[in-house]
Length: 358
Image (spheres, rainbow, N blue to C red):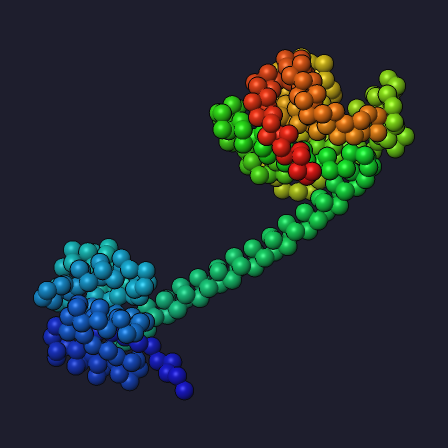
């Protein structure tokens, strides 16, 4: 049967002291002795003690130097060290403790005192290890629960997105494509340093993922309008415009029962501002220029580009070049000129991604 006795190493250049300590402690602990710091480190290659009793005044390498080496190694840094010294001045004790010693006992010491000090520090170390293991187990449990919740959220999100897209069967893939395009666009802007100061304050992965909810409000629009294979009447257009406010309201309801969340924050901004126009003629708030949130100005270009190059109930898909021309012509009216400039510089890369049939 494997021994459960705790292991203690005593380091002292005085053989008599080593013999006394071994005699005093052997009934309770497995005691190993080392006459020098060098011998200690040789011993540590073979075993790991639960505690080290360390003399201060030794030739070649004194106790302060030994503990410095012990504390600099990940393998030995956490082993409790009790200094044993004939020096009774406070400065020596403070120095030992400041170097990481668990305790400082002056010689000569009684057997009872030494045993009690060792018992206390082994108990403290056992509690430290137990707490460390508990925290690790707790972190593992929280991580697993977080992953489970995240997977559930993603499943719900995917279901909602599929519901939205099923309402517009001719626009299938729009949400997935726009998310991909948006991620590319952000990368291009950062590459050129355009609006980088603001973008770098975002959790970019959360922002890009949140774009999946930009059209969530369409679940409230009647099929007869959403799927109409022709030009909408003025009344019908006013009705479909409501998907923006409806989307914001849906996300606000989710926010009301959720902690502060950058995903939902970006989602609400995207849902509410991706139909605003640079010249102030968009909806729902007639915002103009940089009063339109950057998230919405980005999504405006991506949303229009994808709508142009894919079939919709009311139109056939245009070519990439035709879509790019429309976006170029919308510079300064529909779209932010700086954003259009970056989009045009990389328009072939958007075309290539679209060819992959996301």
